[in-house]
Length: 481
Image (cartoon, rainbow, N blue to C red; front, side, top):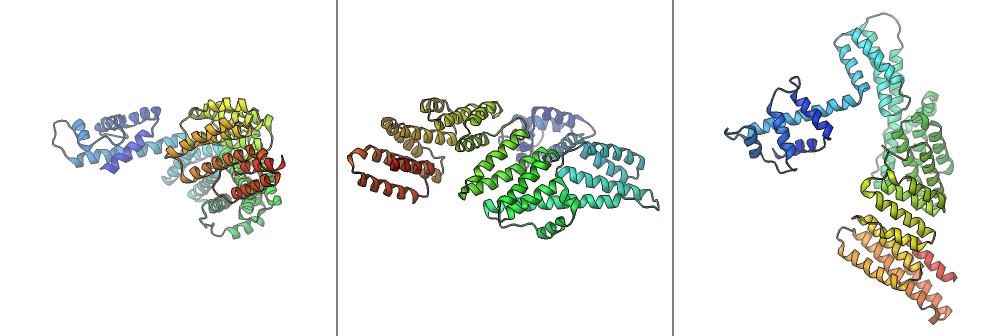
């Protein structure tokens, strides 16, 4: 009983206000529903907070002054659940008219209503021909229509040649090979992330078959995923990655936007992996991929940009010294961030820009405006503030920030142990570097260098420390000055 109520509530609370209105109309239609109590049951569950409605309460409202029977409530909830699921299916078909028409055509054909089936087939074929962007669904629909055309020809019982079966077979190849390549790439990607070890079956045979079949190798989706697979399978080379990038550039006009975003994400993940291995030249490539996405209007999805992606791209731009681009990017995409993160992400990234420019006062002013109950931003804000006070040689400000930062790490129970230790490492070594810097005049040059070298080696030997590159850079600055 509880499980069924939970399922119903999950579906109801997933409805938009417009969908709720349409579902009520669905229940009011005698064709879909003849049980008048279901609309009232929907209202009861809709008005209750999740998990608060009981079977007894439902029975009292649906069957007043009647003997309590749990099975009666159970049956009504099960029926409502079934109607909700059917409604979601109906909503899907309403949102995908071509899919609905293909299903309708096949059903008419199964009923031997050939003229109606042919009329619907022509309309479906015309609608599909207008879809110039390729994706998995488009390839599958093309195959299914070719298959329907062959079935329709067979139903006419004509003893003559028809090319629809051959066409259906070719479309099946295109769909199958593209899908196998997509799956193979995602398996390799997941293996890189979580070491799953999965690998698509027969993939090397498929690669060989694509190599010797020109039409398949020229197909936009297959071509791009073919080169992507070579990069993910490895070994990665500049030449292989360049072929993937060029293939994506050449074919992206024919590929659906959602698939293009996935392909660019693959490319950026490859770059990130190489950057983490010390291949710094991939930072520039990562940046160029982002610029290509921006030029192709792929950065925004439904008019929105994820706030973490916003920050990531700012960080890459700053590391490359693209200051004008960063400032323009921060301003241009502010309004496209989710409302709950908009101000915090904007001020934080603008602070990062001013910090990179060594305009510390401006950076601090922006950081003070980062007001959001989010550990991600709070940790970043405190770390950047600490670095500003250190670089400004403001010992009082640094001491205050160290005390405040340590207290925050100690009291915040939501921070992971890794994050706690990594940020504690930043605090500890920043403070020790500042103390050594302040003692410089009191130490001989030899003693100062020995102390700095020892501290640098200790930093290098510490695994958990955030902003490690910055801490080591401060060591280098002290060594050279």
